[in-house]
Image (cartoon, rainbow, N blue to C red):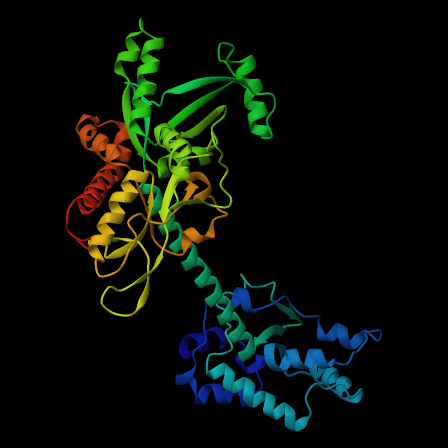
Length: 470
């Protein structure tokens, strides 16, 4: 690559460099690896004019501190390229007269040799393909060219490499976390109601917008108040998403009962979505619209009145619950067990997991239904029949919303899958054929098909007598 470098500098190489350096370049041209693309980052602003420095008697010459010497030696050093002329000699001699010369005679030769070697090895990255573009980095006085360059040392390069590795590692970790969350969101189906125009049914909550912290919302509110006079700008409209499809059906029947004489209510139909779709709507921040996740009401009722008194069930320390209430959608996590082998005198820590042979991955299972968790545990016991596993699993109860929050960093440590109830699977399987090919459903079609296929594999593995490793 020296040829291209030589072409860049041929117009002023005899002036910008002394004879020894130039001759050395010419002899070792085949080994030069000078980049032509990094000039903008590596060349700093132009230096002070040497002639002005010589003429100005008020200039203050200062010594380099120990800290500056260390920086010059290990991190970076400022190198000035100038024409070999009388002004530069006068300035250099003035430094020597004050005993401020950076390099003595022998040290200066060593400096030139080291700089020459670094330049040939490609450690000095500079090019001036277009002087007009980089005219702020060069200046000419009386047809004499002056040039300032920051020479990055090896230690600086190591620090830059370390920074790049850390940045790339962080980017990879963020990508991995997003993939885990996407898989988790897509494994949980949600249900809502839409009309014949493929629009979500929004309920009027009856609340009034008293204020808004978003300036856009305030301006938009005034616009619809004075321009769109017929628009009800005060009410908040609520979109409901259900964990249990039966609750969604009851909501659909309720809407029809409220609009018996409306032909539009006859065209209501269920929409099968996912947590991913739900959180996308939340992040859109629609004006005067809110979206709520309705838990499985039947499951919450049984948990509060029955399950919470079981000996094998405990609650997360952050979970809010009581004798007659439970916050959020309950989830059931089967804890690990320290068990004995029936025939060998050994103990083993067994972690419950679901193995998907199609992706060849193990998934931590999060159950939305206690009965489904028991069925999965019995299947797990059959697989590890040589170990003395308890009849009922040790289960930790938490809520889905807080589990998925950003504060829960445990979720990123392993692949996790949300497993719904059997009724949810049956509902999806029965209603897949009734979903029309429309704009909204078409966007969800691939994910729903994936969810249906995933549920089939999970349900089959949990109900069959085959081991979980399909």
